[in-house]
Amino acid sequence: MRKQLFKTAICAALLMVSISSSKAQNTIQHSPQGFDSLRTNIPHGKIDTILYQSNTTDTIRRALVYTPPGYNKHKKYPVLYLLHGIGGDEYEWLHNGHPEVILDNLYAEGKVVPMIVVLPNGRAMKNDRATGNIMAADKVQAFATFEQDLLGSLIPYIQKRYPVYTDREHRAIAGLSMGGGQSLNFGLGNLDKFAWIGGFSSAPNTKTPEALVPDVELAKKKIKLLWISCGDRDNLISFSQRTHDFLEKNNIPHIFYVEPGVHDFKVWKNDLYLFSQRIFKPTNSQ
Image (cartoon, rainbow, N blue to C red; front, top):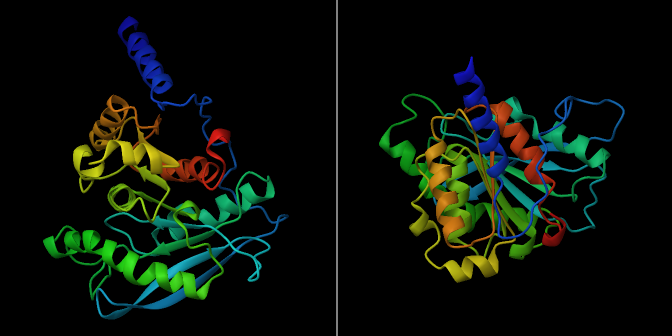
């Protein structure tokens, strides 16, 4: 009994100290009950399917786009690119995480900046379906190749098709697992393109911290928000931990949030709820 109480106390302490930044941070509260439940008495956003020509794969690729309640084509919006995991595709978030429900509820409470959310397929290859051996070398490589597709084809398409800001301060990238690794790799690797970066339970595709942040001073200057989170019982937590350790050692502002949970959508939905409320806002309000 005493041993169990000791373990519980240690876990609680770890959760309390897991929020880290060179700036003072308010204690992060887990999402409230019902944050991901559909409400029928509030305005709702819309999910559209888009088809765009990829110069990287030389194919027509598909993505989903969420436009917020009250969307006005004559108004400009910031954009969040939200990435899936190794076993998913452009529908994974929609079917399992329902970002449209989470964001609709947050809009109704006035907690988020109106934004467009793009849900792409992060497997950039001619046959981009999550079938067969999803761990095959060519399919794993396709997640790295997606950086070219994202920057060279998808972002330009979104900028032509939707009324979005085109500067880095109005562009965010975040993702779960494999998509979390992509988000850290692409976001930190292209600080001229992204100011808001989130890695949820980032997978082994995450580059080493030294490769992610080769220029510490540039990172300090450019990053608006760097969010790293993971479940406390996730077997992949070491990849988030090593990134946090490097960032903390080099005094690079970030949030490291260790939450109760494993490698699943209970964690990732909570991450989206928390991350989305912090982006595209003055950094001193976070």
